[in-house]
Length: 341
Image (cartoon, rainbow, N blue to C red; front, side, top):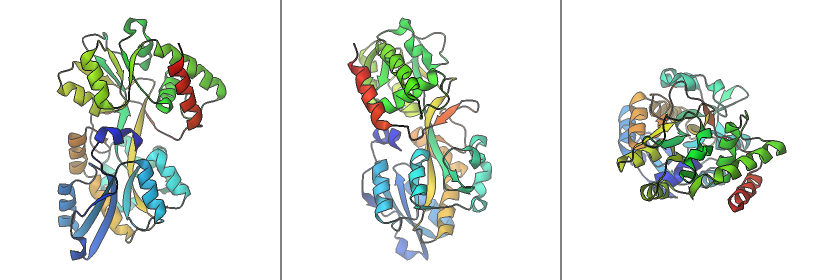
């Protein structure tokens, strides 16, 4: 998923790690995953419980996942991790297999919002399940608790004249258009009409007047925060960005806005070329256990689908990222916004 690849900073593209000498086992599993999704201790425990050896290849971008799966028509891997927006292209290209959820006992124990998979946009098609939600993070709002009172509840606070020159914004047209569309009350922030796009552009130009600086990486935002009078940060990197700021002593807190927070959701899916579908389902069931899920959040800061975390409360409204109507148009719009006086 594109949002986390800059933040994690540890995934090594094309770097294969043999977690176990799988040839020594009657069964083996080939996993393609983001760094942090298949830690060595989890792999060791999975093998101890199942007798199945595991080979993991870590990836660093959505494009790399697509290249590896499409390039071999899925034959090089059994199971891989991908976000809901990207999953659609794999389903359309017939590169993934339906998952038998009756084989996933742990799915009955996941958080209510992830239990009914028909209600999770992007993981089913024609009544079949293709993705099992594993982890997520919202794209919320970080605010300085000493400077912003009372605590904000909406992204609309970013336009408040009281915070002119004290706002950090993320330098990305696609996401900025989407969150601004939500702030304007548009129900579908990913598929906008020309009239809606025009209104979003005008709103973003207004936002620019409040912005101190645009940032690209979480580290860059942290450095700007430490050196300037910053009150509000549009937090593209979610909870990890919050944790990093708090670690250096910043008095900050985090909210998901009432109008809805953009969020990414990564899923485990089974490749069409899986050697043994049942083995892949055993892996997925293990990964959505309470132990692994809670440890994932402790280690990465991401929300998980089994235990509650700071990424989202039970009543928080999350808007899962989806493919947008025209990425190029949004990119051009964003360049125009930044160039506006």
